[in-house]
Image 1 (tube, rainbow, N blue to C red):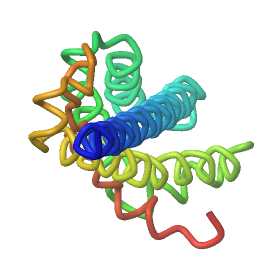
Image 2: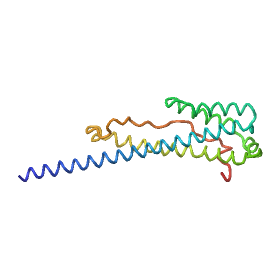
Image 3: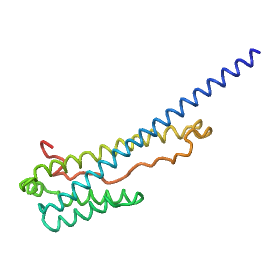
Image 4: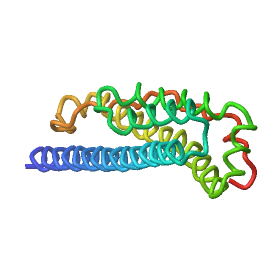
Length: 180
């Protein structure tokens, strides 16, 4: 009788531990999904501001075309090509706003001060959002690698999370703007 009670207690303790681990994994997946949504929002904001700036006739025609095409491609990219498209937008932003003179020219135009501030803010927020997302992915991956999670299939049918790898280096002229 005493052995049966101990077996029940151990089984109950294991069940509670597995339930707690499954709940923790679920919370980490939810955190990762929220971080991905925030990253998507910041990427969309950056592309939208870049596209708006490209069509505002503030930039020279060549810079406008380069920036518009990269921003449009980033907004329209399919999920499997998104990292490349976003990296190309980062490259276009660095090419267009590689010099402080270009940013000053944008700021001198009517409404340009606000546009430059908005673009600088969007460009700064993308690396932070990507870092938060990739940190959440790392946490989920670390827990999913544990034997107990694999053996008891605590992750269910959730796909293995992937980090979002892109070139998110901001243009120096935009990243160092005072008051942005």
